[in-house]
Image (tube, rainbow, N blue to C red; front, top):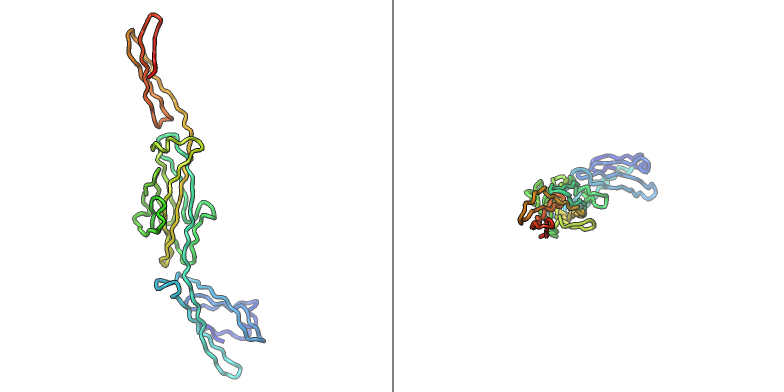
Length: 269
């Protein structure tokens, strides 16, 4: 017999169960895996190997037509075709999560990851057969829609408490803005979340979107009081000191005083 222009002998058919016969077709590989000499039934599998297929005309628009002919012992030839429908393989983006701790200084705090690979296997995107996969859009919040805008990739996208920068390959950096009052108000056990939407595209143009959510874990800051040395002269006046909250925020306070026979009298304000 002949399959896709490749001759297959009777001996090869008889041994296909232990020595499969692989035949390259126009759009894939057909492998003969068995042959029943009593019924004449031939078994095979098909793999649409190679580059991605163009499904721009629809998910069910790509076919591989394989010519098949069988020659009988008497020399008669029977011909036909085997038509394989190659359906579109679409990517599936899986939601990602990451955590970052509130900083104890005004300096920014960053965390890195990859939205395509995922932090754990359950968060890895299903790339399908049409690789490679790339990030083509990033937006703040959960937009519940895809975005194909390459100007948002490899760019800082501002969120509620920081910014994220996602590259084409899915790698990202989230930078927390520790100066924000909402961030500095966090104590241990408190959390905030910053959510972004990203969109991936496979090599034949299919899109899928989901979110990456950053959880910000609070840290209880320890206040410190800084008081400058002062010289109090006879009379009345005030001195001022500053309460620093671990270098991030400060509260100015003052003490009024008046001298008397019995010493310094003071009252906090």
